[in-house]
Image (cartoon, rainbow, N blue to C red; front, side, top):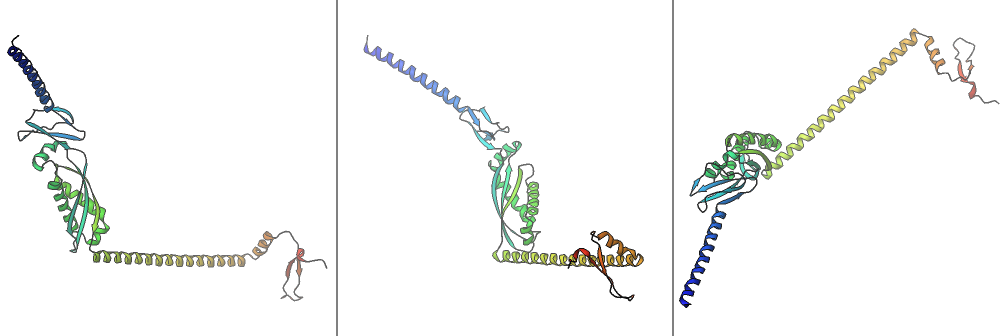
Length: 278
């Protein structure tokens, strides 16, 4: 056999192997590039050559055009972020408030959030509106009221933020983590609270003393009335005393000692059991 013919045959065989391997590789790349997986709690936004698809992809396995379509997963789970705001109270005191905001993106707004807010709406949408709502609430409250009525401030801030965001997002809750005051203002508020507590304590002590005095008067009036009733009963019923003596008699015969022959003499009753036999 001519060596050149063998060389050509081997070359053709190698070329066939190369072509086959290339085809298999291209098919594998196409298959791999045409599928995607969306993790749980996420939805996928499909972007084809810079154009965003109006329909999002659900979680799980999906198919797309290879090389020209990219899939961006967007979380629909509840997320948490911190927002810090410097605001002023109605008495013109500067207060720094730190809020923790709990929010989530509804499925119906996945595509809009990605297209208009780069997929993460907190910094561009939520934080500014929460801060605005908080400033509106604190502007109507004194610094002392803001410290004392944190739950009320939180509730009104949440209500205002939801109204400003609308249906774009769901703000689940806001939590006031910290209210920072100036050292002078903090000291003044603490001193006032101590004064209020002392005043409340003094008021309680005074009320307690008044109640005890009224109770003593009522008790004294009751005792005086009881004595008057008993005296009137004895006066109207002379035999009542003898009846009480009989009721309380222990069964021992008394010894009567006369006080004298006159009518004014007193008779002394002594229990016989108390006398010792001489």
